[in-house]
Image 1 (tube, rainbow, N blue to C red):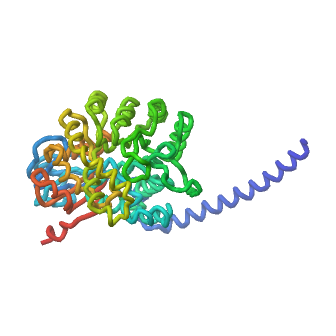
Image 2 (cartoon, rainbow, N blue to C red):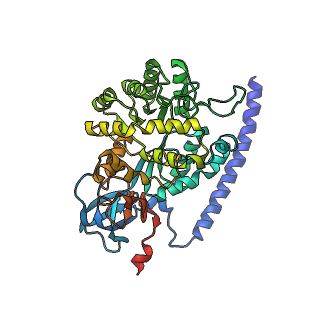
Image 3 (cartoon, one colour):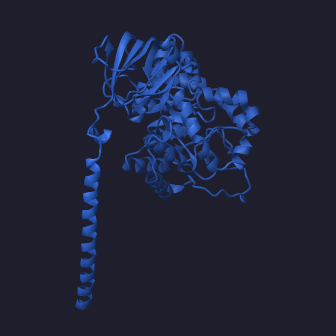
Length: 460
């Protein structure tokens, strides 16, 4: 054995001598090439460059912090962050300036309930003729539409095959244009529940990742699987829903024990839970389990309202989705069962949401975009007036309140030092007319302009 080692060692030494010689030759060649480089050559920009400085002039500034609009404000930006905000702020000579002095400037908007990797078309064609590959191929288009509509941050609450994770990562790398994304990957639901195909032959099988889990052990394992594969949030189907073929829109679909286990498992991995819940019993079970938000919540009762209020749980009402589905049911080819569920839900949810508003339940803006076309997210702002909210309260839902729900109050939702330089501009005053937010003219994300319909006006 010792002789073998000596022979091998001698061979290695010989090879090392050759390698050392080659490295020495390579080093001398590099030195020669370096001497030929231009005298003014600089090291890579990433190693030496200071953050790019930029100033934005705002004719009217809504900073998202609840104060009165500020006239003739200046926003100073270094790299992707805001460094200062205020009226008439000075800045160094030669700083590039974006002049929005004839516009209203406000924080980039936040949508806490999107499905950005899909968009409803024909119900049966979507279900049987399109695969997750179709969704992945087109998702970047929906991401760009969402960003150009002024939504610089979204929480995406359910996608197949981890497409949302891939899209988020591509956006973060700068390879795809889109909003900042927090993703929930596969929605977690029970057998026969809202995210499990039902009403079909048991001999129909779909080969894809499944979010179906029953019982504490299965649920815990699925949460771990989702966290392993990139989930920022966990989404659970606590009740039935409209766009599925189980019988009842509001029936609970997980026991208290199962929901408790899901929230506890998510918390162990430092993740929070968004609960799809229409029906009041499912809402209350999810609230007792400790979810961060109730999505939809149209059948909430007084006890449910009290639980949300006491525990600081957000309600995310998607009012425009219901208007769209009832108007477009025939065009979408929805089965009669789904249309009937939507009609039944619509009879009482406005009154129930108003009850939550009057009780002071926290509200965040979420649209369910994907059920209706991406890029039309802002159509919900005007619809929310039906809940008795003021324009300022509605705008807060999509800025400071949404950032609080996401745990991003230190980085999004306001135009303030230390936040991302995410801002949008409109011609008019959205506090007087919320439909102005459907006509976003300028979008900046992280200090980079991604949409500018005002450039030609400035040039004149």
